[in-house]
Figure 1 (cartoon, helix red, strand yellow):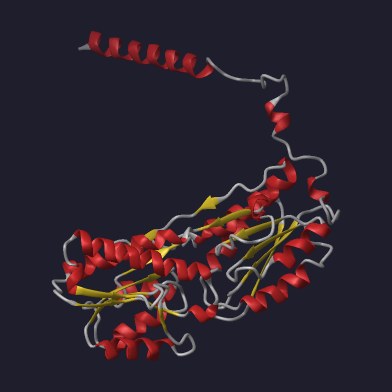
Figure 2 (figure 1 turned 30 degrees about the vertical axis):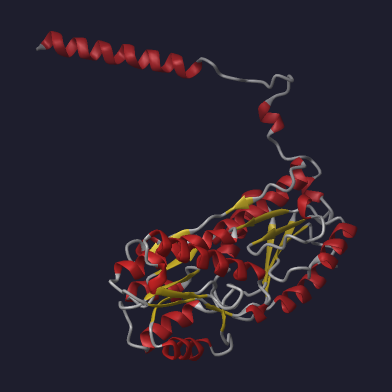
Length: 360
């Protein structure tokens, strides 16, 4: 027994020595070009005096709706990134709880004239409305990064980084909705996708289309498409619904159809009202309701059974990465490094895990 213990101890010592030796081998101390990595990792001497020349970087992040809570984790992410690089972050946006691109543009027109600003992060929900901002920023020498909503037509798009969720991710919600309806035992009925194109958010329109196509495909693959009517309006971008009175508009829509078995809403304007509409109709736990974003109303709705599931955009990243991208652009010359934040499907099974660190 003693010999065995001594052998084991000797083997452990030998193993420790070998591991230590291997950990030291293969180390790289300098670049092939001869420079020192520690020195190369330092911030450039002129970075803190970029543009404003006041000894620190100041970035402004401007959104099109700061009034409904969706962008709260975006602002948190931007603040975290700012703390990491020692930058001041101005958190700005429309005070409205619904999309308000006009107010956002008003704020941007003020910010781009501010001599203390070193970089601008902005959402771009209204296609074609931001070229004057880009032109003014370029003239002033201020770099821009876009986040959240995507404008493919924006001036110099290929040289401006974008962080956000591709609208095609809504297909995850559409597929989940179709499976929910099939699993519910329903043999027929309407699956509705209400929205409002009047708000001018092309990203939301594309989400509705992606969800619609996924619902149709899932039902078709199951051999059940003929049994259900999937309605996303005449152009598959949403059934026109009043965003100024969304709860009553949704209840009226569902009751007018008489056979609604499920619904999908594509943004924060209609998803919290969907939660209230399901509860108001007495359909808690009996209606396949899927939506977008993961604010308090969505999380409470999922927990209570009035919302079956919702898609998150991982918005913390939509604040964090643009700040880091602007810093890298200023300090390292790295530009247009886009990030797709993908989609996070949250249901009753995992809703308790959401938002523990303000990230969703």
